[in-house]
Image (tube, rainbow, N blue to C red):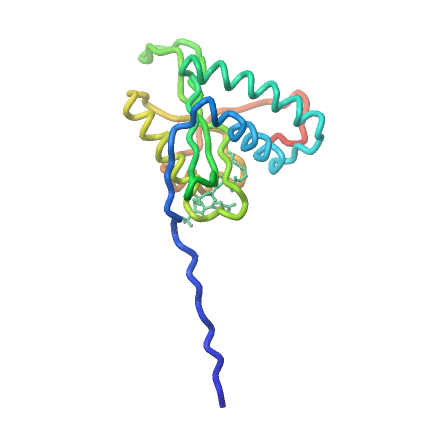
Amino acid sequence: MTTKKTKLVKKPRRPALTVRKATLKDLPILVHQRRAMWRELGAREQTELDRADKVYAGWARSRMKSGTLMGWVAENEGKVLGGGCVWLQPVQPRPGYKLMIQPYLLSMYTEPRYRGLGVASGVVEKALEWCRSNRFHQLRLHASEMGRKVYLKHGFERTWEMRRRIKRLREDS
Ligand SMILES: CC(C)(COP(=O)(O)OP(=O)(O)OC[C@H]1O[C@@H](n2cnc3c(N)ncnc32)[C@H](O)[C@@H]1OP(=O)(O)O)[C@@H](O)C(=O)NCCC(=O)NCCS
């Protein structure tokens, strides 16, 4: 009797990954990632996605120029696999915290073929590193269902932020 040997092809835990800071030249990539993220979160209307792309491109461009939006792209051999951004979000004053800005992680996206390989983790690590070296005390975000495990793994915890819906948007989570 011949036994068939099954060859186990192991998926690499992490592809050789470079996570680098995005420049203005990467803006089309960041816009693509944002659109693709919203599509996965349920936004489907092309005209609305097109409109949102334009608004986001202008919003991101001016903030990247002023240094209040930092993007990171994860690459393997020059191919972009994913990315994410940190926005220095204006916040209200409060005792014990002089800065009226807080870092906020947004637009996290990994191309579907490269999920589960640590791409988003690489971006989260860079974002946290940036926050630490710029002496921020915390990094906030709103986690999609898909993103939750990634953030929990990196030490994020749920907070007591609340909301009361006035009108439900389909892609709201
Ligand atoms: C969320 C997202 C960015 C994760 O990207 P990724 O590159 O696959 O994440 P990582 O490989 O770094 O995953 C880190 C950990 O989370 C786990 N994980 C990632 N996606 C998961 C999912 N959909 N369900 C369960 N666990 C998941 C991974 O298995 C890994 O855990 P492990 O190391 O114990 O195996 C990606 O799924 C995505 O782009 N989703 C669509 C857009 C989106 O939801 N963005 C987040 C907005 S907050």
